[in-house]
Image (cartoon, rainbow, N blue to C red; front, side):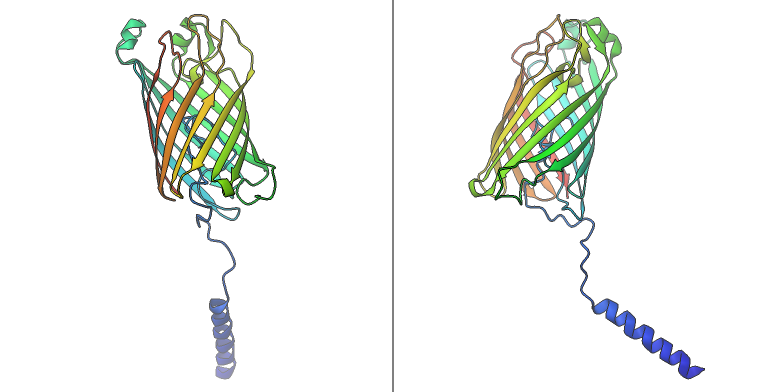
Amino acid sequence: MLRAHLRRFSMLAALYGAVLAAPVSATPLFESGKLLATGGVSQVEGAGGGGLVPWALITGYGTRDAVGASAHYTHVFLPDYTQRSGGVAVGLYDRVELSFARQWFDTGVTGTALDLGAGFTFHQNIFGAKVRLIGDAVYEQDSWLPQIALGIQYKKNDRLGVIRAVGGESDEGVDIYVAATKILLEHSLLVNGTVRLTKANQFGILGFGGDANNSYRPEFEGSVAYLVSRRLALGGEYRTKPNNLRFAAETDAWDVFGAYFISKNASLTLAYADLGSIATKTGQRGLYLSVQAGF
């Protein structure tokens, strides 16, 4: 009996030793294997991409066998308003992205002129999802096919009374977009084009649809970024917007930015952003600052 137990013990010990000695082939769940800067930064609505425009890239640095994530805080200093945004996003196996962002749009002293009261603030929650359909912007360098992703953002505002008063139809809406992103590593260049179906007024801050238009229309968004070094990217973005409200014309937005990737765990974006005309106030342009942490 003792010999039988010793034999079993020896066999188990040998098997256990073999398992420990065998090379591990499985990729760690949080291995952050993508190239630096290819996770992009956090867009104001929470999606991975540029500051104004979502890209087809999936947030974070997780590869096809791993998970990535990011968290951001963004502050936009405008002459008559202040916009802030904070949120989190998760990238699953470089295929699916899930995000949440909370926006605060502070009217400051302008709120008094608009009969809202000084410091009146709009709040908006944005739940997003994105799925990579085809292509790989990084590893398919021998193909002109871009990485293409389909995204959706559900937005919910908390100021229905004000939205109705200015001619808006609803305090909630859904944006659907298709983004195509191509990275030319040889030229250190990223090019992105996004088409968005939306009824959002000022990204949804002033609700959805209006007395001038209440139907979905396609809007174009584009980004170009040049990688000056492996840590610093310079670029610009342009985003068209619908014009749904009679009381105030809405104009397009653009920015020029610099994004510095301290590491795969932290980045800083500084931009000069022009958000156009907002609620009768023209020339809404100023400093855009965003910090991101993730893996």
